[in-house]
Length: 168
Image (cartoon, rainbow, N blue to C red):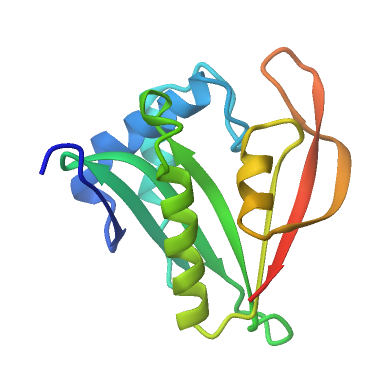
C-alpha cells in the first residue's frame, strides 16, 4: 500500500546506518535540539548510531514506503530505585514527513512498550517553544518544570528546556 506507515523496533543499526544517519542529519540541520549542532557531518552521525543500542535502550523507527522517516528511543532505568521508570529520548521525524502523525505513532508505540516492560512513569525533556511541546501535552504528559539556559544553539544562544512526565 502506498504511503503506509509502520513502526517497528530495530535490534541493530548496522543495516540501517545510512538511513538513520541521514535522518539525524536532516532533523539537526532543520533545527532540532537533540544534542547536536548543525551542520552535522556524516561521520559524527554514524558514530552516534553505532553506539546507541544497549540492553537498556530500545529503538523504534517509523517507515513509510519501506524508508525510515522517524525514530524514538526508550531508555530503561536500571538503577535499583528507578526500575519503575523510563526516559523517552530523541524523538525525530524527517522534516519532509512532519505533520503526518509519525511522532504521535512513535510515542504511542514507545508508551506501549514501556508498559510491557513494567514501567509506570515516563519522563522526557524538550526545548521550550518547539512544536513537540504540543504533542507531548496532547498525549497526556505533564510539564514538571523548566530549566533555563539548558542547551546552546548553533548561534551560541542558551535556550530553556521543559521537563515532562506521564504516570502510566
